[in-house]
Length: 309
Image 1 (cartoon, rainbow, N blue to C red):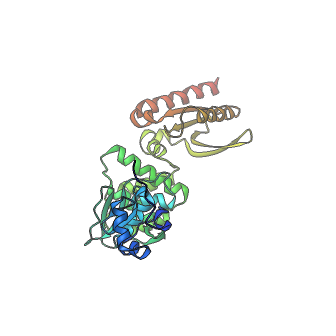
Image 2: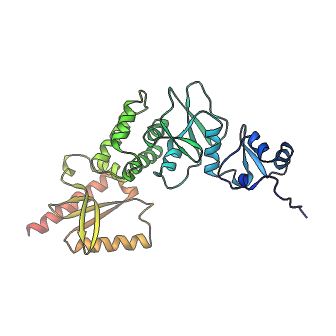
Image 3: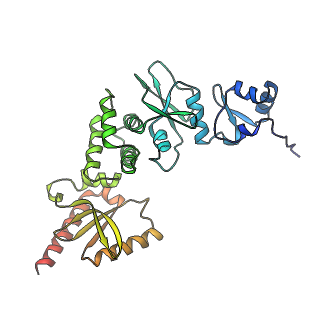
């Protein structure tokens, strides 16, 4: 039968919300207890010179604290945007902005981003975290523009940061002006242009800039707000001439079940105003843009004929 030992480290260590240096652990207990706690796997080394309670070894907050404490850098990229509230799920990988001459501590979940000067930062749970607009720039510049799935993800995260108010177009533009070298700067400028035109998600950005780009679709109003049967609805694309709404359904948010029922109720409420809704699935918008364009144009022609009859 395996013997269960009483904890050697105090509750502050096992709370699981930060990392500790060796000296901090010694000050909280003793060198002998720290060595024994390591042998018993009560605590573990998370980075060179940084330790934590072993059950919390993979916790985002602990890894963030360790990476910030083990270097002179600031957490940036997707991790910083998550901390600021632009991303709903903590990422596994953490990006660390570092001066050009410094290297990030070695870990499979930690990546160093070298920069001539550290970005402005704020403090979060003992960590230095880049301001969201600089974190967005680092997220964008770190990616591979030719890898579609990676580009889609970056576009969506930055639009989410803008839509939620975590940062603003003005602050992001100012940060870009203070960052002389940005990989694919033009691509990031296009994201800002798309947001200004009404795109609040990757799918809406794709629809605006690719699938439904061009003069023939300029008749649509993006993000049109309408009241129907006591509810307020925001339409992705709305053609007032034919009262046609086009909804771009992202797979994450338009799954079967409860959301499907809400979509059906929405479409029914809009129908009482004479508004017909055309729903286009994510895969079609991204991978079958010609079919989407032809479908929408065919609906517009049919609605125009009905109005003229």
